[in-house]
Image (tube, rainbow, N blue to C red; front, side, top):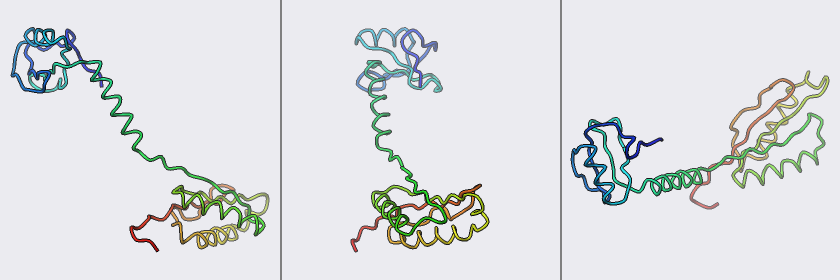
Length: 173
């Protein structure tokens, strides 16, 4: 948000809040500017929509720094959800599939989502039920750590399903 400061403020009358946060009252703009100048601080319009606009005596540079710092902290607090992907084919060997499922289990335990993708080549696409069956078997194998977020569906030459980690309960098993 862009704030008007000092001589950028255009209202003839303003509601003044002092540097220590006390409400001074409705004063003329020149009086408010004089009060800010007396404290060696800036006059910042914090509520331009109010009638009369609310202005505050503060150090504008410090105010901007604190706002940016708050924004960084809130961004840091947000958790970024990562989606890992395992790719298979309808004819993937059992050992190879077990290896991929082990990786998926580890990722799910770490709290990541897993996208399981089965890609069809050539005439394999004529048997999508095989891929659907395989995806459901994988979901069953991982049912102790994951829930199906998106059921298996066919998109072009790919059938995919998304697994999400199970919500952790307070009690240990």
